[in-house]
Image (cartoon, rainbow, N blue to C red; front, side, top):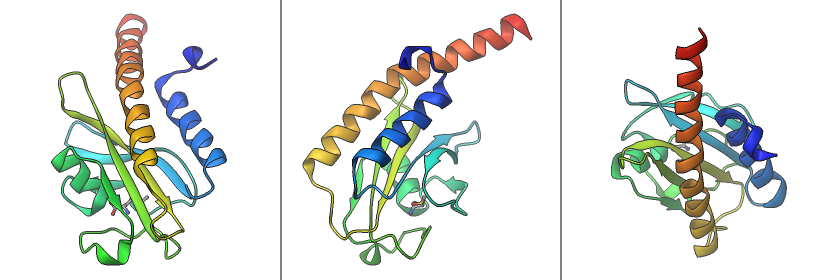
Length: 152
Ligand code: SME
């Protein structure tokens, strides 16, 4: 089924699957890097957020994009460079997704209403998903781009 979906639909499906299966994933979404180097909100499941565009370096999302590292913040009140989306959020994990050239394509962002819910399994699993998407999404983006060039 997943092979027939386009890039955006795949990301939406991944959000839904994670949201449905992990009780402490309470906001699950993607930020995607645009041409100007801003992180733009992509598909997500959860409360709407005012942070639809995030500059590299700003917040946990911006820091993950800047450093190209996974950020696990077990208690957001201890993080000074943090953009709050909802007062319910207590912790957050952000995992970068890379293009084949090593640049940041975007990231997986998960907020939790629980304090310190994330362990190594979350990190490993989400980094694995990011690896899979690196292939799929880049492939589909190129596919969509070529379709547009060919047919529009
Ligand atoms: N808390 C994030 C902003 C995005 S929301 O979690 C959806 C941050 O500090 O970058």
